[in-house]
Length: 368
Image (cartoon, rainbow, N blue to C red; front, side):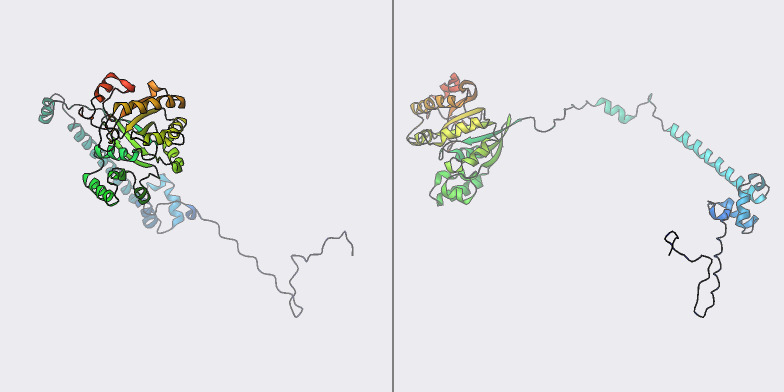
């Protein structure tokens, strides 16, 4: 076998072998498709009246003849049927022009005559113009986040709840419900704390666990309260609340023994103040709470004792006492110096203190 010879293939013209030894006749070639007529490719609007007249009346259905004729305007105009259709189109165009002229005249007639004001316009001119008030986008009052921090049982939740009650964010019926619940637990003074301490664990133990959240408003500001837990086991939750705050409210208990427990080594008063400064709380309001307590009775000596120990410590934490820290005596339970000033019969030195600007305080109450 010669390798240079290509593979053998049967000739296309060779007839196919069939059993019996006879060759099958070659298949006849397929007929070529008919050429496309002009009418097949023509784009004619079958609903056109002119095309219908040319196709049916002049050409008797012969589309090829009709296509040639319609493309030859000179020959087309020789037929009277075509002349009639063209004349009808000209008449319709004239009607449209007349209708347009009529509409334009009507619009001109509707023009306002400035020389003769209408009666309604005259009445409007006589009325005094309304005062234009600039639209205010959003609430213009400043918003501040307040975090209440301090040792356990200093009265943070009670103070927070009383602020909400005094600002009418809690209705009286709800307060009565909390009073009854606190009485059942033999903890009658806890009813205001129940506004912030909402879960069963907090109410049963009298200790805040999660950061309580609430809002209240004054004429000048909008506030969000963050009631941080005071127990050392929940310091991480306190950190979460303090990290969101603009202003810290350090709540101190003036009751004998409670102040010392919070301020001495291991107390949460020190740790909370230091953490607040570290977390970016610049301004601190130090409220000496429970001033109405029987062991204190609004004693100025006790108030001065607490402040005397807090000042150097807060300065050591990095606070600028004269610019960033304010001190105020209050009672979170009965609301004295929270919204309303304490009566002079109970605290004769309070008014003189804030009027003189002592302890960086020139306002009578916490909310003023």
